[in-house]
Image (cartoon, rainbow, N blue to C red; front, side):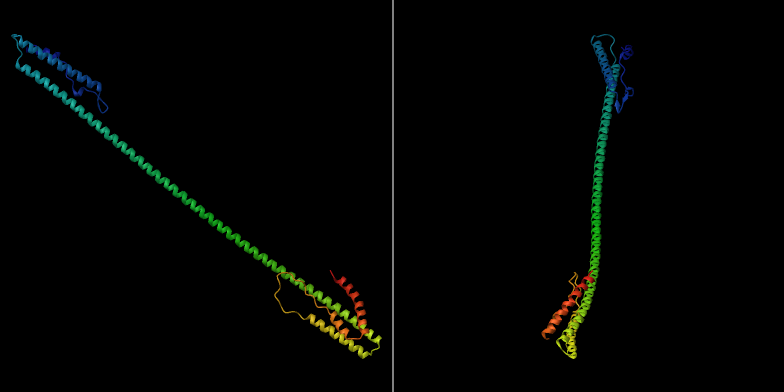
Length: 303
């Protein structure tokens, strides 16, 4: 039986070794692991078959019986192979679980990192949007403030221009009113001078006519001179009263009608009413004679 052990040992399937298993990624190749398990199963089956053969031979009473040492060696060999295979499986399982756990932890860390990156990106986007919103708000406020300042400046400038224009127009209107007042006053003075000249001419003519009438009435030269002097004195008094300027008043802003001197004719008539009828008739003829040239002179002097 001892002579048959080497042949039986050669018929056994070789046990797989961990060093012979190829690696794939983080673990071993699944196909090779299955082949190793299959080889171990075949080896176990062969050992069991040999054990049964030995047991059958011992029961048949053959002269050759297996020694106890060979049986013990076969059993130890089987136990050692099984323990090695169990250690291999346990190591593979432990390595696979460690690899899976490491992979899971790495995936968790990766996802957590991605989540942190996403949160940081969201926070950055929020801060950027807040900054842009603040910039837009500040720009809008500055633009509104600038528009308001420009509008106030333009309004103030236009108001000043309007005030200056109004002042210029007011000053111009004052100058024009003063010029018109001065021209009206000059025209009135010219009219007064003309009226005074006409009154003097009329007075001289009336005096001459009155003297002629009084002479025709038979009065003496002294009486005629007295009456003429009285008439002249009355007319001069009326003229002086007309020449007396009124109280100084503030010039009106608008044009007023030129002052008209009181006519001297009514006083002449009043003085003439105290005389006899021939004198009054002579004065009326003198006035009628003097009115014609006065009218002509007015037509000549009017512009």
